[in-house]
Image 1 (tube, helix red, strand yellow):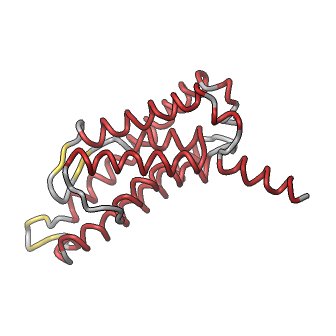
Image 2 (image 1 turned 180 degrees about the vertical axis):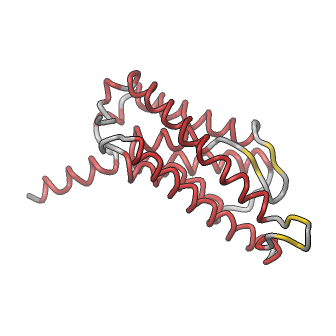
Length: 195
């Protein structure tokens, strides 16, 4: 019975023999590399606002490869981003938010029945958690001024972030759905997504 429980835990975490093949490691590396490029080089940003889609490959990584590889992928993405920007501020709340982009979808969708409703709920929860974590991180770095929604008639720092969050939600759902649907066929040999 103890061995059965251990096998269930390993399966839930994504620590199966299927995930430790050369093919799987190459797929994981490719998704992490795409996330790094999208975050570090293909994003619009100011000090307090960023428009990027690095979260899409991280969510797909979590769905296909489980929580352990989700944590590793999010950590690697943030680590390379920090190094490439020269902001050696170490492990902080922004690192946790990068990990959450992959970890929450891994917990909610890995080896579970995939439906559009589940995906929408997963993206909504993930985006909300990350938005909250990033807001807390910005307040830590820049002070309470980050919580200002409007300063008279001038938009405060929170307004553009909130608008970006609301606009990105349907785009994230669509892109993640398309990638999971297309990659589900390519990754079928792993039998990771149960339909």
